[in-house]
Image (cartoon, rainbow over all chains, first blue to last red; front, side, top):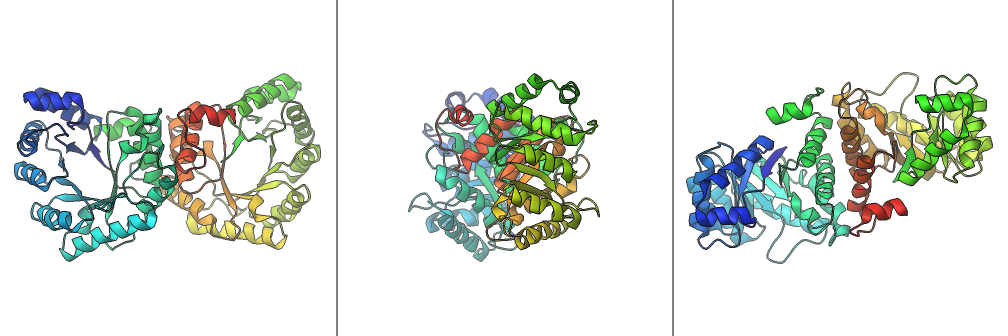
Length: 262
Length: 262
């Protein structure tokens, strides 16, 4: 499971403040805590309040790289911000994200290829959020087809079915879970799959429970990655146990500790 | 989700003692606690120490029926013990269980039919425990074929893929989960699926976590029922949330309470 820690995001007040004050310690501590909790990579998002996201992204990337070599997922809807992050990266990173819109794919797929970055492809377009599995499959196929044409390695593509909050789109949850399974058969080699997890519990009263239940169900459908809060111990315990059940971790009595120490 | 409470079982010391002393209060309290926790039915097993399981089964059934109308799952490897339970039942019950062996099917399928009972079919035979998905599918198909021939209603058949402990059969877990999905396409109408859950965590150091993670993954594959400890609140919370995600419970902020009060 490719776990991307979600906590370095300017939508959180502590990060927005640190970014404004250029307080490296706050950012670096947040990075190290997530790595310690089991994150394989760290999302980096300047947030909606950033006045100069190009320079903020560059500063965040440089700041985080002073304390960890983990891959960074450059999270912005603006290709220029992503490119600024890519230029500052010391290691192979992740572009978070392209949509299925041609104007996004045409910029971001070549960028991902030239920087040898992984690419998250959101199954969404300027026409709106998909409303069923067929629409998700169509959007996924559009992204896979473009990547194939451009000879972008499909095993570095992570398709995101777009997870909706369970309290507003309950009837779509089953489709979202099945999309994760069916994305894998769009091409050979298969694209990978990922979810931005926290959205599923937005506005609910049992956020951690909803998050960990949904992600466990998604892992059962073959999910390869998730953007989440790795400091949620119950969530990580569930994920590690799901991986154990799928024989992706070797069983030992202390398998939870063993995973976190790996 | 058809939840069968597992706690009235003579393998537990309190139940064995109550059975020996014919202490109704202990049995009835255990029944009511499980119903309160969300059990839809109650397993009834005399345990390995019973000297007269035919009479003990009859006593247990009568004792439990004094306090609840929930269906009872008559749990024995001996058809005579099951028949004693069936004769004492006031309501439609569950036979737990037949194997895929002809000598079991020939007795238990007609019994289930004549008592209009649900039937749990274990995907196991006298040749041993299945070692992979193909063997599970073969055993499932044998049971479904026999039930169809005998005109037993397939929607009352619950196939159990045989859940092994994750610490001894880790490589089989994925096959077990996929069997749950594939059993559904053996016939139309589909057979239902069930697991004896607690076995998955036997001998592990994080039993509740392993149980709830496995059952959540199984629900994602279409699981219809489980025999489990309904007094494990974390387990029931996970199950209820998985049902919510599959749109089988209506969302409300207090959906956990709402489910338990239903």
